[in-house]
Length: 66
Image (cartoon, rainbow, N blue to C red):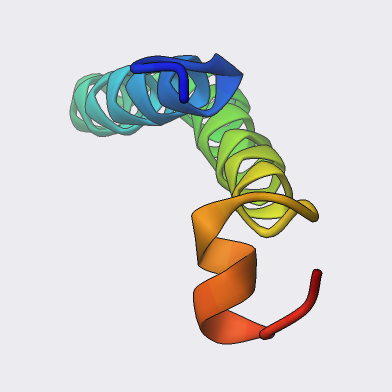
């Protein structure tokens, strides 16, 4: 079992995007805010799909498959 994977990088990316999104919203730079908010959303979707992939622990816990 690997200690870190791509899912962990996506989780870090989500944290960065959320912080940047809040920062740019407070500055009034709404286009940048939207861009980082979309990045956080797609990172979250990617991490969720990766966590539920066959052979992953979350897949076994939640879906009981494989």
